[in-house]
Image (cartoon, chains in turn red, cyan):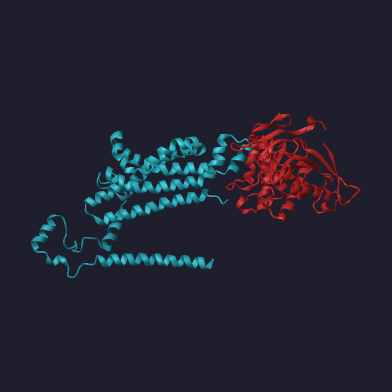
Amino acid sequence: MSTNDLFLKVESLAKSYPGNSEPVFDEVNFGIRRGEFVCLIGHSGCGKTTILNVLAGLETASAGHVFMDQREVSGPSLERGVVFQGHALMPWLSVRKNIAFAVRSKWPDWSAAQVDEHVEKYVSLVGLSSAIDKKPSALSGGMKQRVGIARAFAIEPKMLLLDEPFGALDALTRGTIQDELLRICAETRQTVFMITHDVDEAILLADTILLMSNGPQARVAEAVRNPLPRNRERARLHHEPLYYPLRNHLVDFLVSRSKHLSHGRAPSTPSEVHPSLDNNPDRPALHRVA
Amino acid sequence: MKTAHKQRLQSGLLSLLILGCLLGLWYLATLPSGAAAGTKLTPEQIEYQKMLGKSPEVEKANNGFPTLGQMGETIAINLADPFYDKGPNDKGIAIQLGHSLGRVALGFGIAALLAIPLGFLIGMSPMIYRALDPFIQLLKPISPLAWMPLALYTIKDSAISGVFVIFICSVWPMLINTAFGVAGVRREWLNVAKTLEVSRWRLAFEVILPAAAPTILTGMRISMGIAWLVIVAAEMLVGGTGIGYFVWNEWNNLSLTNVIFAILVIGVVGMVLDLMFARAQKAVTYVD
C-alpha cells in the first residue's frame, strides 16, 4: 500500500512539556485508510488523548505533522467530529437542541425544519427518539454518550474521533452501544480513530489496532491488523479461531512488552502485525511485515 | 410527601405564632401606664397643648412609642391614598417608592450594562483579569456613600448623584460574578464549540452566556440587595424624594408610626425584589 492511499497521515508527531527533559511521545507515525476503523490502545499517560486532540485540532504538537485528505490539520474543523470522554453535552439544552447546535454550525443556511429533520434522523439512529426533548440530566450515562455520538455523526464529518467514549459505562450498556457504533459505522463507511483501554472493544470494533508503548517518549510500536472478518459480532467473537491469538498478542503487549519500549526504545515506524494460526496451537506465531 | 406537607404546615403555624408574640409584646409594652396621664394635666396645660396643635385626649402619656392601634391607623391612611401629591414634602407612599425604585432601576441597569460585558472580557482573558484585578480589589470595599460628596461635586445634581451611588455599589458583585462565571465555563463545552467552528458571537451567546448565567444572576441578586440597602441611606442624604427621604422627613415630623410604616414597606419591597431575582436564577439554573 502506498502512503498516498492514506486518508489520514501522522508524521513524526511529538509532544513535550516545558520542564520535562523527555517528550511524552515522539516519532509517532501512522496512517488511516478511508473507511477504516482504527483503535489506539496504550497505558494511561502515554499521550493518547493528546494525539487525539492534535488530530482534532484542539492542541498543537511540539513537532510533526498531521495530514487529512492531503491537507495539513492546523486547527479544529467541522470535517472531524469528536466524541469526548465525558459526553460534553450542554446541560441547559435538550437532546434535540444539543444536536441542532452542531447541525446549525455545519449548515448555517438551513431552515429550522431542515435542521429538525436532520436532528431527528440522527437521534433515531442511536435509538433515542423517545428521549429527544429531555435534558441530559434526565438521561443515563449510556444515553448521554449516545447523544454525544449522534452529535458527532450529525455533522457528517469526514472522520470521527472518539476519546474513550465508553470508559465510564457499565459493561452491559457498553456492549449495546458498541454494537450500535459498529452498525452505524458499517452503514456510513465512516473513517474512525478511537482511543480505548479495552482490548475486547478494540478487537470488536477496529480493523487496525495501534499499540502504543509506555511513556515517556512513547511511540506507536505496532499496527495490528484485525484478522477477524468485518461483520464481527460480540456474541460470536470468542468462537473465532483467531480471536485468542489476537487477544493474547494485545494483552501480552500491554502487560509486558509496552514497558520495555518506553524511552524511545520502540521503533519509529510501527511494525505491521498480522496475527494468524500457527501449526503449534499453544504458541500462536505472528507474521511480522516490517 | 405527606411529612413534607405536614412540616410546611407546622413551620407556617410557628411563623404565625412568632408574629402573634411580637405583636402581643408590642401591645403590652405600649399599654398606658396606670392612671391615664392626661388627667394630671392642668387646664392651662391642656390649652397650651391644643395651641401647639396636639390633642392631649389622644396623645397618650406612655413613652411615646405608638400603639398597635395607631400603627394600624397610619397604615390604613397611607394605603388608602398612596398616590397623592401635596407638594414637595407631602407625597403618597407609592410616589416615594416609585422614585426610589426608579433610581435603583436606573443605577442598577447602567451597572449591569457595564459590568456584564466587562465581566465577560475579564473572564475570557486572564491577562485583562490580572490587569484590572488591583483596581477591582481596591474599589470594591469602598462604601458607596463615600462617593457621595465627590458625586455631588462633579455631577452637581443630587438626583443623578443618587443614581451614581446605586451604580457604583451594584457594579462590583455583577462584575466579579460575571468574570468568575465566564472563566469557569467547562473546557469541554468550549472544545465542542471549537470543533464545530462556532463563530465568536455564537460562542458568547449560545455557550458561555447560558453556562455562566446562574453565576451572573447570583451577582445581580447580590447587587440588587445592596442597591436596595444603599438607596435608603442615599436618599436620606440627598433628600427631595424617595422612600429614604420619606423616612427622614417623618423622623423630622416625629411621626414614628410613619417611620415604622416606611420600614415595613422597605422590607416588603426588598423581599419582592429578591424573590424576583431568585425566580430568574432558578429559570437559568441547569442540572449538570
